[in-house]
Structure formats: C-alpha cells, structure tokens
Image (tube, rainbow, N blue to C red; front, side, top):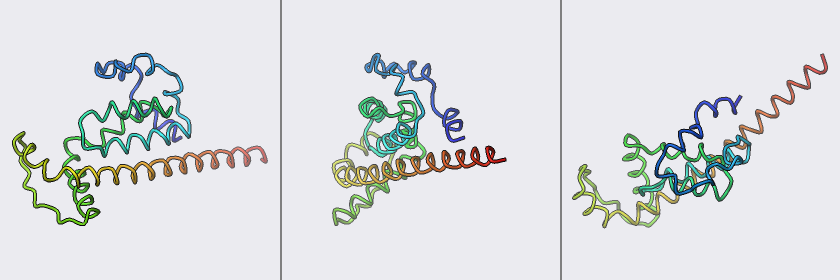
Length: 172
C-alpha cells in the first residue's frame, strides 16, 4: 500500500530526463537500482531529500541527485522531496533555520525586515549567513534522521501487517 502511494507521487523517468540541468549526470540516472522502491532505497531517499530541502542554496536538485546516486537511494523520490522548500514555504523554513542557528550560536537574532530585492539580499546575507547555514544544517540532519526512521518503521509495519494477514488467510 505504501509502495502504491509513493508510485503516484514520485516523478517518472521521462519527467526527470526532461530536466536539461540533470543531463550532467548522464547514464547514471538510468541505473535501475535508483528507480526501485525498496525499504532501504526509499528511506535513504527521504533522508537525502529532506536534508537537501533544508539547504539554503540554489541547486538543491543537483545535490539531491548526486547523493541519491552515491548512496543508491530512490532518485525520483530524493528529487521530488526537495520541493518541500518552495517559494511559499521557503521564507518560514529559512527564518526558522536562522533563529535556530542564532540560538545555537548564543547570539541574539537580528530583526530582519524582508524585502524581495537583490539589494536587500546582498546586504542582509552578510549578517545572517552563518546562523542560517548552521540552523539549516541542524534542521537538515534532524529531518533526514526523522524521515529515514519514519519511512523505515512504516515500511516494516506494513510488511508485518501484510504477513499477518497472509498467515490468517492460510489458517482459514
């Protein structure tokens, strides 16, 4: 059941091949192990995707695809999960990461007045980048661990439930 739900959600090989920017990975994207939905591959994909989603840098997709290839995780799922941070969620996630980083560093967060402009970004990034990076890394590692454990646990519970149902049917 979990497999069926995930298959509906993740992109197809054709959709990923359409991304011009992913052509740098060449035939590695075609590796069949990267497209299989297995317990380990899916749990690793959640960890990679959630970690990369918290990175406050452009090009999260390259990092997610590269890590999926290196760790033989489900590539489309790793790719899809980076879109947790999108233009709607990014300000809240990165503001929370900044506050967490400032708290971990023991510094007082700067009152930041957000403006959607390049000038604001270039002036503000000098003041906020260290706490933002630290907070993002901590959030990324926490979400990666939680994602891995959650998917692994759900997968095991589903298999256990299916096995018990099969045993009940055999007894009848």
